[in-house]
Length: 394
Image (tube, rainbow, N blue to C red; front, side):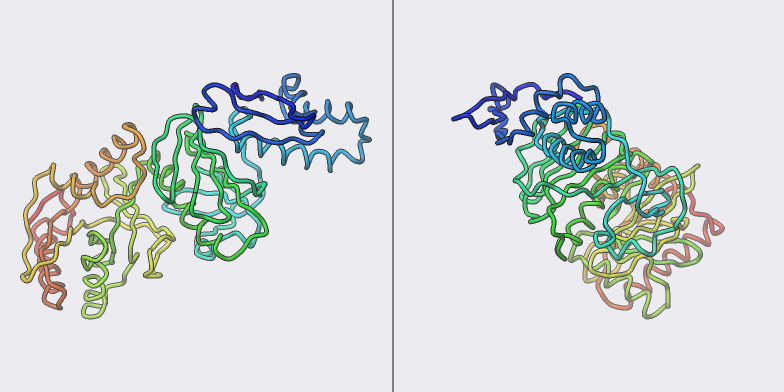
């Protein structure tokens, strides 16, 4: 634990402030007004290796009896969390806490540590109640309520609703349009994400959290060979089939035609997580499904991906191997903040498209479009003896 370089303790009319200097001013970092305890904590930080040692030094300086240490610890940790959130304090790699709910999403184990009222209802079907070693721990902690300072480090994403900054061991993610969800500290190996939200917690925060958790989950999923594709999926002939297209093209309309006329179950109405495991392409159930409200908890073999394009006639177009990978990648919403992340996504997309049926379907929004595509899939399965042969288009 150490103070971040570029912040100095100064007094203005005897009032202590932490003020940025040099590069921190260039980064538009904010200063912070301190009370007497905050000033004392800041002065003691260089003499403590961790929070426990700092607590002992602080208690000794104020001659706090042992029975009152819990309240002091709570106040100290709140202040240190604020310093960390504002980029004024550097601590060793984060370690997760142990309480909360366990989930299995997309074939990956998650531990969500949060107040009960902040667990989105969409997650309930994915809770397995098992104690396990999670692939990722997500913590939701109270924020001070003060405006988050601009993120230091290397700016990776800047948009109206999202700011992603890469730091040495983690990503700092800000949510400028959320009234209560301030930021997330995401460990680079994807094992831990800490969200900071302003209490008292209100209903809009649940929606903000649900979508923000998707972002960090997809980051972690990419490190486990999974890629999220904007698509609707259905179950036919013991396989999942994805229908991918930009919003408004008609992927939901097309899969609803299958469901209505052929009684094929819809697995997810908007987003699917794909992987290629030991040469077998798969899709994995996730709770995020757009406005469709249709999702599934299971994993299925992937038969193929149909890339939709509106047309007055129905026709399948053969694609080259590079076109298949590119078009599938273009339908991905998995994070690609760095070259390394883009390479990970390309690798997954290539492995999947080389192992299953991929075609582009020009189609209208009538029953005949579903009948045409169903016949093409049936013909593909007959031709290859029911096997999803590598990347063949018909």
